[in-house]
Image (cartoon, rainbow, N blue to C red; front, side, top):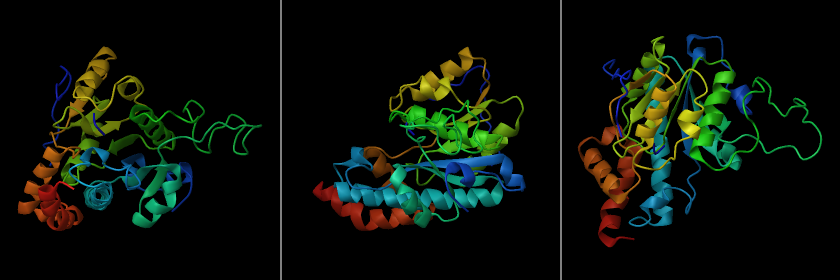
Length: 294
């Protein structure tokens, strides 16, 4: 998620705390402590020409898709580690809708939810409900097909997960393969504070790598122009205007440009264990690719 790091007067850094089928069944919480929380990885299928296109060049379309596949493997491993330290249900909010089988094979231990609701029915009511609602999701959650905007997709998946019975839901990007698992744990600890309405993880580019909420985010995501250097600043301004109390995690970075890819390569040269799959890719691909500019 490409989403500056300004804090509102009510914001504070709290990060010192160091199954199956439509969302809907998949996100139905089990009888366990983790049931009250869900963490969703916002992910797309790594298809050449559609994944990490801002890294083409220096990478080729095929290499960019392969790199993103590695990102997915590493961020899912990070979520698994965090889930051992802090109770929550891990999930993937995926796109396109046809990618369900790919993500089921990639992460059979994760719950799955499409990033967009189903298209409107063309004739008559759907079997599940005359209103077009899916089982377990209240009618106030918009389920009609949404435009391809990140804010709309975030609104949909966060709202749907909350409507499934979770009281805290966080969504993270899939562009930060070295994101420390402790930051994910800290997000839920922030949300445990009854004074906190939402938590964000700022990105170095002015966006955010994580959003955590206790109620549908609404204007926090739908009224902000994503993929700009002022995403988080604009989001915090809306939160302040609506009287919402926000906490901020420590800053991290996502990888959307050649400079950020180089930063990642330098980090993994010293700490390959932070993202093993990505490290292997960069060791075999990035050095030669960055020289030849393929």
